[in-house]
Image (cartoon, rainbow, N blue to C red; front, top):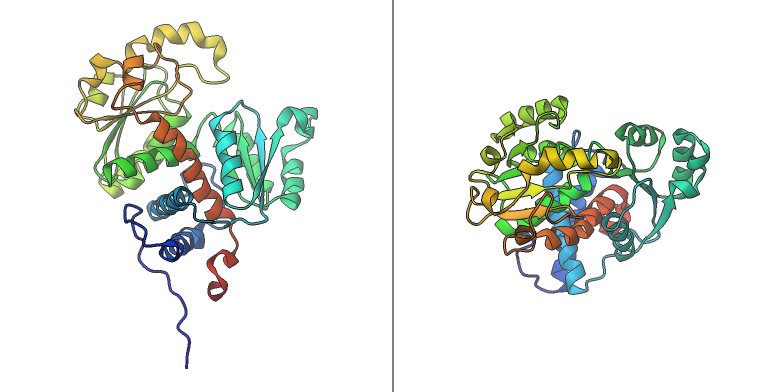
Length: 355
């Protein structure tokens, strides 16, 4: 008698109530297989080389991993794996979510401040990448220049994950769209208005939104707009997915009718010397009661945190009923676990039949 091998079934949305641990196990295997088959061993530096389908598979895996964690279902998909975490910038959410995520997945994380490694004494990035690749199974980097991350990744033989650079913040955006999918049920057709600095978050929104059918509007002061190359890429994908991209200096135009309003601090790490100037330039772009009155009445407010109440957002908005900033912060954990599992898991994570 022939034994029928297990085959992946169609992905099931995480809104479906689990029918017990065995059923959750099947859905977790399915979601992991779907994400893993094209992403295993790859880097996540930004979203430029990630397809729409790959993004959807990552989100589905994040949904199921979140359900597994909430239900107490053991999911040690990275048993025995180690993640090296290189930090050039201070962090709360990035460090804690990656460390906890690796622990919940059965692995471990190693914190490496650049000041406490040979990088601070001039060791070339290629050498660091080659050495770490022989010790660990993945590298997460939170740094300044995106080019430095790209250089390290080009020499690493294990997956490299962007924990934040000056140009891109993909892990944050995966948590953001996971939050929106949980709330709205579907992403296609939503309108997101990003108001503030045309920084790494604006770039990552422009990269991810069109691929998921989200209409993205970015409003910045003159001289602070996102990179034109990123805007051009976003418009290309918008044509393919029938979504819309708007980059403007008019905050009200961006927010009018929007389903989601998103902002970030006006002065990012590394720009502290511009603080006083930025306070003046960005003042008309504060997310406050007057601005949000132009949005969809059932809008959501998102902020990647930390927030400066009274600067980029008023307290009544970030602490009000439309704010989902702490759901968003929690989802850093679940979204990053999906990335870690998809990039770093072994075939054995799926069971012996799928090796």
